[in-house]
Length: 93
Image 1 (tube, rainbow, N blue to C red):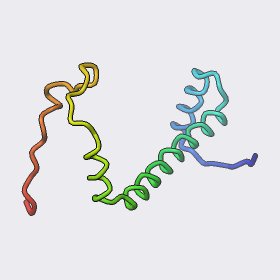
Image 2 (tube, rainbow, N blue to C red):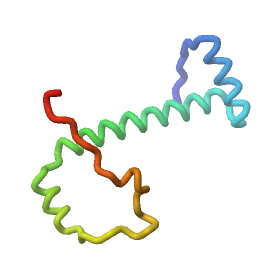
Image 3 (tube, one colour):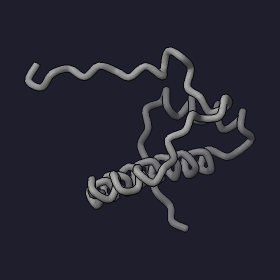
Image 4 (tube, helix red, strand yellow):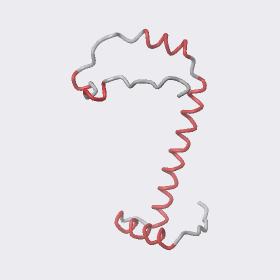
């Protein structure tokens, strides 16, 4: 494990202290956890961007054709408002 000195604004330090107390953890644990969560989010975004670049429309269309064209189960339906397709704006506007 390594140590790191970080300068924080007073208001942020106070908020971290209060939050750590509420959560029953040390400020170090709270900051370590927050940093790990942020890093995971950033790494996930990078992974998804890289994965999207590898995608191929032809393979996508082939996979989509293999999916049965059936209505979803009632528990899996979108609300009526969300089910309507969105209108696309014409290009160049």
